[in-house]
Picture: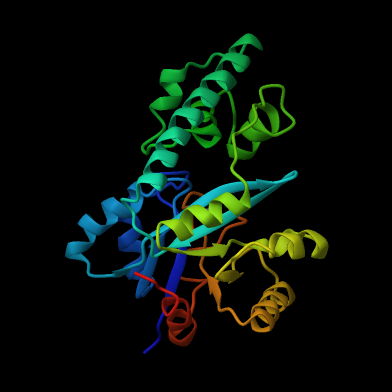
Length: 273
Ligand SMILES: [Zn+2]
C-alpha cells in the first residue's frame, strides 16, 4: 500500500479555489492519507476541515502558512501541530484580516481613479474566506470582462509593478518562527528553492525545525540540495503539493507531491503537543 502525506494545500479560506469539503474529497480521490491545510495567515480552513472530516476520516495535521519578509524577499513559514486557539496567533490573523481588507480597499480606489469600473463589494463577493486579496480583485475583473484571465489581470492591473500596487504588511521570519514555536508548533521553511545560496544561508539561521524540500516549484537538483542541507543540519525535510485548485500552472496537483511514511513520521516525531 502506498502512503501519501501532503502537507501543503490551500482552500477558499485563503487563495485556493476549492472549498474545504471539495479539497478533502480530492485528497481522498488522490489516495492521500495525511493532509495539512496550510491557508495563508489563517487557521479557519483547518478548523472547518476538522468538522467536515468526521465523515471522511483523513488524518489532518493543523497547519498555517505565514507570510514573512526578509529585505525584499517574501519568506513563507509553514506552521504545524500548534494550538490553533493560541491567543497570539488568533490576534495576529485577526489584525491581518483587517490589514488585508484595507489594502484591498486602497487598490480598488486606485483602480477606480485610473478609470477601472470596480467596487469593493464586487471584490468581496469573490472572497469566500476571511483573507481578501489580489486574487479576489482579479476574479471580479474577470467576471466583469475587464480582464481576460488571471495572468492578464495581474499583468495589466494588479502586479507588483502596476500603478495600483499597495505594499502588504509583513512580519519578519524571526517573528513568524517564534509565533509558531510559542503556540507549541513546529516551524518549516516553505519552498526555498528560488533563494540564492547567500540569502538561503541567512534565512536558515532562523530556528526552523524542518525545510520543505518536496515542492512543485523545485527541480530535482534543488530538491536534492535541500535534502542534503537538512541532513547536514540533522533536521527532517517536509513536502507537499501547494495545491490551490484553479489553473495556475506553477503549482502541483494535490497528492502528486507528498511525503512517504518514513518521511512523514520524521516530521511527526517533532510534534511537541
Ligand atoms: Zn502555499
